[in-house]
Length: 475
Image 1 (cartoon, one colour):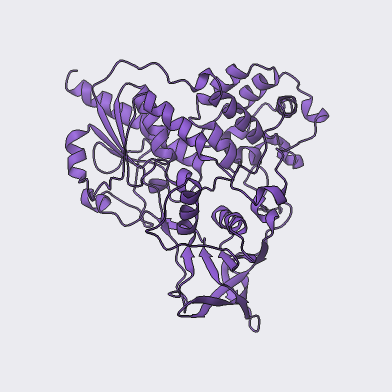
Image 2 (cartoon, rainbow, N blue to C red):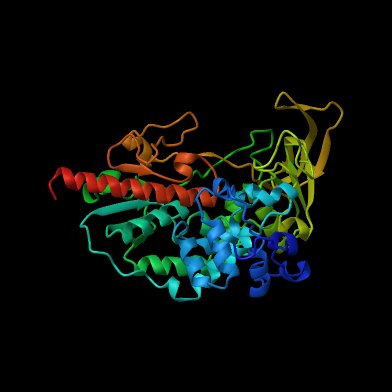
């Protein structure tokens, strides 16, 4: 390492943020780019640990010590190439990934891990603003055609890998724009969409074709793709939201989080929403049910829309400030976390279960809750703890249960697990020859970084399948 004692001399410093009073008035990115010298000093903290546990924490297998060292030495292009060798979109993961690599960093034994995510984001931005963002020269065409269904991170990563291998790749997306949850699920204050658009332009220049507004298994039969493509990759995600079936659920003003976030992302993009009933938090008491990242995104969006009050409820008990003995390093630390949205005015409550909604024909007005105690891994209502809380807009952000019911999965009769996820082998192959799956569709709801890893893995599986098929035909 360039400075094997850097971790003893440099204190961990995270990226800066725009002031709350400023950022809640717009949807521009909350975090600020850090000065190069500051990031360089942070990279120097990557110690010569011998066994880089950060590799086990990163689903992509990012070569973290290598590019940290190169960054510290000022060799940014070399560092970026090391990063791009395993990660197609570091400028995205450097913003939205929760950094399991940092959780596994040896310095997390002292609760002061290397700011890997900050270095990754800085390198990703360096890529986008330099020659490394230029499309790679086209490979000799293999004559093989691959259809990718879904343009989220798994589908896009796989498409880029396959196009660079010389295959003709077409990505089909049912929405009007590309990107999946990157486009419509993540607010612009976390991921401005021009970053995504730059990557899409690179993929298009490398030969990837995009078709939007097409429902594969609906307007476009799967059988048609089977005839026209040599291999298929399904990467449609797991977007079936978890519902809350309690009395009053049918009242107006109770919405799934993704409907709320998608509509606001469309507003920010300048889309006309005349055909949709507006979902607005302006002047309302908002309750977000669900304590994860999607719930936090709803909090930040509701604040920006002008909510009079935002309350976020979580069924689980409040996590501890520090690791418990039964949660040792290098496991993911089960500790209390706050997002940038929580600093913008939300109130959080834990160990609360919603038992009913109240309201009238105009909409929801209140919800009733009870406190719960956790025994044997299950919540139990605490007698006498019932509350009645004002709620004029309720957003259900309790996660996803699996893939949406779609005809194409049933049409091909793909093998699925007990949760409805498509069953795949280590190479992403499904039970149907020539058909592969990647991302949340096969893994279940997970992280962007896992989707990228699955997309790359499936692309390698498709490449091997196509080569094997060509060899069997003597080509």
